[in-house]
Image (cartoon, rainbow, N blue to C red; front, side, top):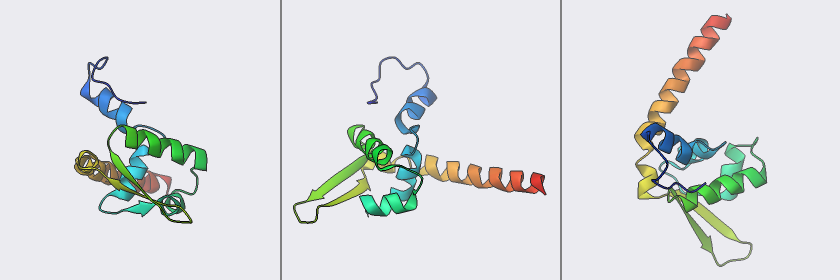
Length: 112
């Protein structure tokens, strides 16, 4: 799902296309300020299947949002981190988190 500039009339649509995959925003959130191995990411997202997590990581790498560094060791070691382009999403992800916290607090209050 590589992003091309053509075909988008709305910047929000382009942004959602880039980060709107099933786990993409969550992956980016977990990588903010950190470098994590695949297994560490998977522990933080236990509902993600191996296939889905690998697919989302490949797409984020292809779109230039994350770096993938493979070490030539046995057992294999692969680390993921945000690129500068990926880091530029930090304020957006922070606001999504704040909005989500507000939403959860409001819905929990309504349920009581």
